[in-house]
Image 1 (cartoon, rainbow, N blue to C red):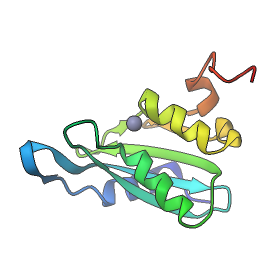
Image 2 (tube, rainbow, N blue to C red):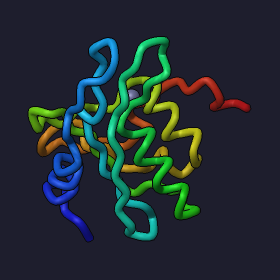
Image 3 (cartoon, rainbow, N blue to C red):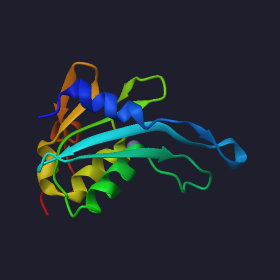
Amino acid sequence: MITNNELIDKAKSIIKPKKMKHGFIASDCGCALVTAKDNVFLGVSIDTCSSMGFCSEHSAIAAMITNWEYKIKKIVAVDEDGMVLPPCGRCREFIHQIHEDNLDADVIVKNNKVVKLKDLLPYRWDENL
Ligand SMILES: [Zn+2]
């Protein structure tokens, strides 16, 4: 089983900021996740104008789904300075909507601090559906 620090290092390893048109930046954040089947998938952020960009969690999850996997055991995102970033609100919801069991995913929110996704999503909008 991959350690938290190994997962953080994998997320860091794919960060390579690239300035694009209008000064927006791709790949200044990296994400690494471990699936329920112990596979690791990586993704980078792409920031663009007109709200077309996405966080690194999105592309890591897309990579996971190319392997027909949906359940996340552990996930982390890191910025270009190597700092662990908690997932934004949109990513918290996105991870949840990919699979209900992801509420029990471990989310590394900073070095040496891990919480369950469900603790980052209290009072969910679909709890009673
Ligand atoms: Zn996000």
